[in-house]
Length: 138
Image (tube, rainbow, N blue to C red; front, side, top):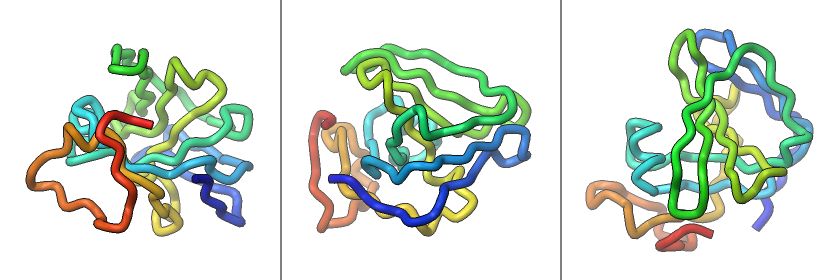
């Protein structure tokens, strides 16, 4: 399920106070439709890229909001200046970090491999019919 990107990934928040650089290719790109991701993104789902934590360098202050989920705690990292969601830390995948696809400098490089938590998807959400669907996560 891994996706490959040939370039280093760069991104950050809307105001530029938080920036990151990822030196490894994403292990997975997915759309999460859980209720928590809907609330955090303000949309139908959160589009995320999962990478090894060691490959991501973050500059600037990131504030975290911790919330218990179905599969352990999730810490959602956001810019304290503009409020943009930037990264996620997953308790059950401590050596991985997820970045929001919309925070990439070039979001067009995002190519999701699956939709997860589709049991929580909103009826007005139109998912890509060719992507695998997982009702309750990975």
